[in-house]
Image (cartoon, rainbow, N blue to C red):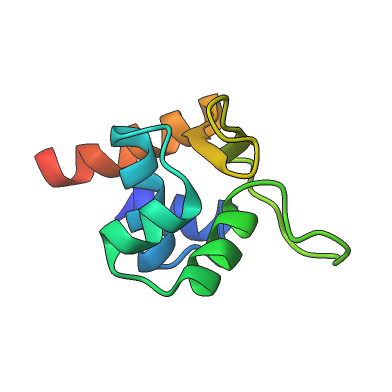
Length: 102
């Protein structure tokens, strides 16, 4: 329970959908937002909003930003963004995965 309390303190808006997104990006980096939304069976716009919070925050808005996910231009198609976890996101994903193993 100590880990859950720590996560709640550091990431107060973190919900189950965001955990699913983070773990999926951790396990299979490089997907676009559309591909990820389809894979997780989530609405595209909803997925975009969650990724914005997990990443740099929402453009033009004073919103939280956790810095757990990076979205870079896809080399094959500049219109798409390729998702990956940051070192901070990797650390959190490994902690979350350790809960399932423990």
